[in-house]
Length: 157
Image 1 (cartoon, rainbow, N blue to C red):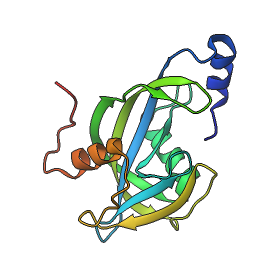
Image 2 (cartoon, helix red, strand yellow):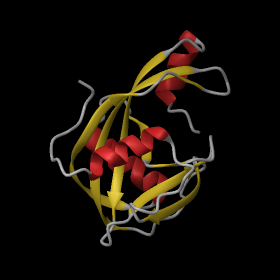
Image 3 (tube, rainbow, N blue to C red):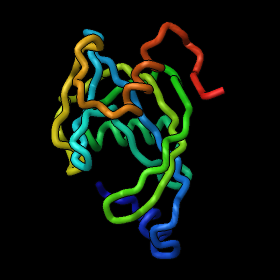
Image 4 (tube, rainbow, N blue to C red):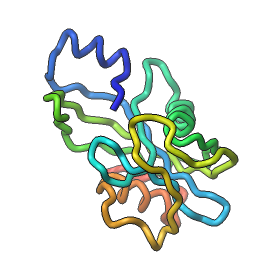
């Protein structure tokens, strides 16, 4: 996984100490109601597109950037779907982080879904009732919140 430059600079000062980072994720639907997923290179599991915001970046802009960088897909943001906190993550290199995730629902508007970076092994569309078994738990939560019949954003109460 590429590490954003601002995180590299932080790590130079704090080493592997825990970092609290802002993140975004997006559930993208195509015209047939299928969901876009990526198979992550770091753990081999399927997941919704996600990433870290750059300093000062708007979450919706970050989602559009991450989506294009990782999959070549463009989409219109429909709404905010959930806000939650990830569990603490310890990476193979020893870095520790925890993320505030702002998740969105989006509708595909263009672009051919494909692997566009070294963060992912595969990119594919799936029917919501035929999702892969080896999907991250956080993506299952984000999909559940995005596809439910409630326009309100979900957050842990």
